[in-house]
Image (cartoon, rainbow, N blue to C red; front, side):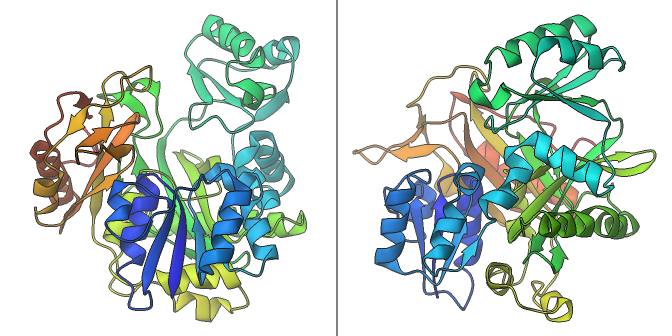
Length: 428
């Protein structure tokens, strides 16, 4: 098989790296890819959001499977367009991708199909927002309805802060994404992420992961796209995973079918492990980033048959279960190296060295998330989150130790990372 991956971040690099290991695969192509993905296979300078250009490329290459990484092209209907051309696509339709593209849609879906989540209200004006805030106690959860590049969620610690944020968001802080808000009751507990690979009816759950959204040590500071992750997350026991499958994942998929929005791809379920049991914080219509990196590193078997089954459908659950990668899952951790200033303003173009050295360490892989190569061959940072230093180990502690060994091998004075990734479970 020849497989095309659409996207250019750390998530897509991890997918390319894993897919390339399959004995079923001849070539892995990427559009547009990144310097790390270029080492795996040809990269084509095509934007994931330029659907005409992506379609033209697909018609030229005729891949056997297309894996769409980012949420925006999915929400804009790229998977529908390519399926209409007769190609197998791992990634949901625009109708199904609403589960991430519209927080209001996803909350209404949960309410309609009795899926446990926080109490909420959809609002489009300040007066209605403040009236609902009156029914809640601090802290307050404010979410832009639309896609905001992972930055559209605000936890307001005081009512004054919540009122100010409501006014800012509804007046266009996140553009069209925050023309409508979802205001939620704050849930307490530990967060975790569960990823369901599905053809819309059958499902295989990957090990639970835990992300670290806040930029600062001890989970402080503003939210980011994710500063690190690990899996498996012990907070999600096998019993709780069964509960998530039966009370959340399967009802969600059945609800989407009922709404004429059958989901094919990976459904990300962000969970809060509350005293009353798991509740949904949010859904995503694609792999989390950087959770995807630890999942791809930790899975020991071939993931390609499962990706293909999700894209094509038509299997029984029994046959679907048999496609789970063989060999189980090794504990894995990733540490994000970001540019100083992120998630605020930051400079571009600083030189990074030492990645080859880091990759030579045992069980370490550095995934590129925001890099470019200059004409002289220098690797430079062009993004906020720039590298995902990922490692496996016999235990989570060993995986964390190896990941930080990889971080220490990289020379990049203009970058930073959190030193406490996995603090809830680290023993050393």
